[in-house]
Image (cartoon, rainbow, N blue to C red; front, side, top):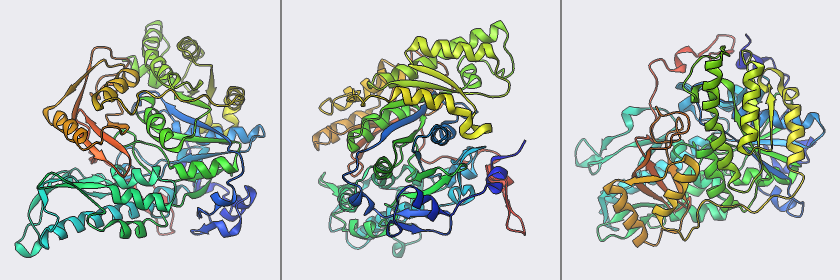
Length: 558
């Protein structure tokens, strides 16, 4: 079987200038990074401001399994399929992090004949946006410790410094560290740690900002610590926000690449959906909606994570309503949700397990439909799937309220493998989008917001707060920060906070361990269960199989 890397290496890729010219981007708005990647100058929004927006479509999925459900493949593939039926379309996805790339998950450029190119460059850093996020983040961290070392005029309480450092790598050894060791000349010793760059508040800010002025304002609002008298200390107090904006002045510009079939794709920002809000940038969406009739945008992991946060956080900020949701699933993943792992079997017992697993699909359909948006299901077909299995999933999707369900094969066939889905989508988005039914009101208390998310998105009625979480709620309420949206950091592998629990649990409780404040991003950040904001590497990381051959060819990238 030919790998996605081999397909990418044999692809006929067009110069990015030609892709840009076809879609109406003028040369002054194009800032090339080599022959096949370019940044888009934000001045394009001024030129296109009077052009009506196209239709925005969200692609999300069921609860993920180790197989991968194919959301990125479907985001890319659906844009390709729409082009086959004459619709001017594009896709907007997040930039891959090198942590998962070298770990176990691999890259995030799709796969097979539904991937974005150049695959290697995109997965290995693209235009350096994530590095700039990390640099801006770590500059602020350095300025905090320098301020304390140089007299601590603002009287920061070193026991209440919230701002850690970040790196774009999976490294569990950095989760908890002591800094400032080695004597008085090396700083003030204190406990700290690292998070992965995708979890940085600056990454969320970059994804949610609307322009450079807004970016500068948001960076200044970041709360990094408390003073000894209980006053919040911000990046503005430390006079760091100006320099941070300088670092991010290019990273705010979306990146333009192309799919295997030459369809334009914007890649911008990379927050994870389990430990952040999991959506690509508002700016990339805004540009795409001015240039295309239909824009496919992806939210990470299941609809309980990226999907929920897309509506309650991103749509609240952007004021853009999606016209439809495509929910991706597969036979083998739904069998796993039914607690069976027989990918080729279609016995009556296994079919019964599949139906039980479809309760997970039904929940995700109802979760997305609750926002007032039509939902259609894409069934990602694999070679061993039987007609009986596919029929069951279609039946269960309709029963749960999906407006349609289509079998796709984007990986092996490219856009042709989803023409039925493309036609179904175009029928679904004929009318104007409905106003969004948000899960909670911003005036709800913090705990009320968390409970409403838990019930709607996770099917969980009871929330347990740790003593620290209770103190956090009291503190943020006292500081008048309780009107913000909620971003819950939770395992992607279950609707609960326990990754071993599959299907549609009904008797579990959601445990909130702490609640952080992300004033720059504009949300409260609740940590559920044992979720880590710094992942670790597996026993045999993917990096062990990667190599650069003497002829310059890359092998082992996935």
